[in-house]
Image (tube, rainbow over all chains, first blue to last red; front, side):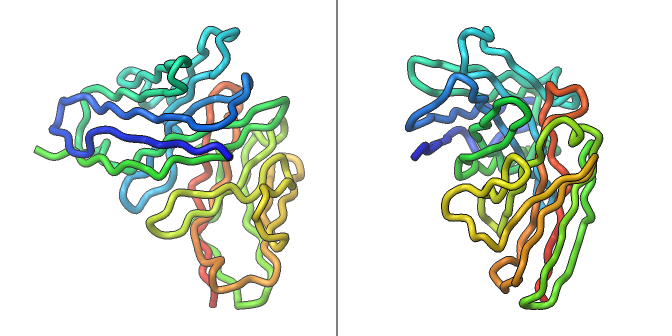
Length: 124
Length: 107
């Protein structure tokens, strides 16, 4: 049973950098992607981006175009952890941030495990 | 969003409801479905058209035709009142995308 444990700062001021980390406990597969998703208050889920677990794909990363200039997702395979950095935050970045494992294969693409979520509030 | 869902659907207790998700990428990629209750992280209900993870009730089923994927809940119970999201790749096949979500109200 895979579990994800996430942590990071929950209070930020405008212009600061959001930094969150997620640890993966349990069996992983080379075809997995590790992902970050957020949900602003009262809104739907927003896909932020993902990183491939497989070294053979050179840690392929994909980002939401609306956030691409400010976002970076990295992975530390030795620790089975991955991280999110979002720079120059504003109040619009206030949200619950989830880490997640995405299973892929052929035409399959789905999240089977979610972290519990971290509430991030941006306020001066 | 490249995946379109009806914002809200209501259904009487014990009846059957179908929630749909429309998007061009669904011609190629399977949709996944998630249920999210207030204050909780989402959980996966359906993946790969009609596969249920262990522990998910058989009352939940999925189907797909062309650019539309559907989640059907049979014998709706009060506990099914929640937000439902579809999720897949986008049309380019490189990005992930969620539908806007459907809020299900059980009458």
